[in-house]
Amino acid sequence: MALTLADVDKIASLSRLFLSDEEKQSTLTQLNNIFDLIAQMQSVNTDGVEPLSHPHEYPQRLREDVVTEPNRREEYQAIAPQLGENLYLVPKVIE
Image 1 (cartoon, helix red, strand yellow):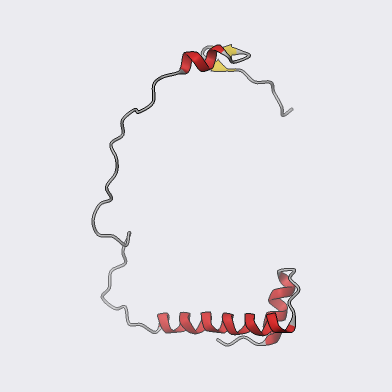
Image 2 (cartoon, rainbow, N blue to C red; image 1 turned 60 degrees about the vertical axis):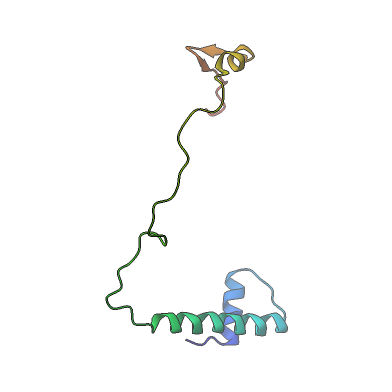
């Protein structure tokens, strides 16, 4: 699929972009190169290749889920303007 300068003009118009003649030509070249690459990728025979759920076959190393910070709930709630049942109370902002 090859684009023309008219296609680039239409895309720029829809995108609300103003492109100079040089930028239009550069954009046309870049877009056509992208479409050529897509066509090359689509022409590759992938019969018998199973799709991957993740590019890495091994499990990811994750850190242990342990608490690393001290509990400061009492300190934080001591300076709160209003509390109710250990929850922060805030004024209603949406009617």
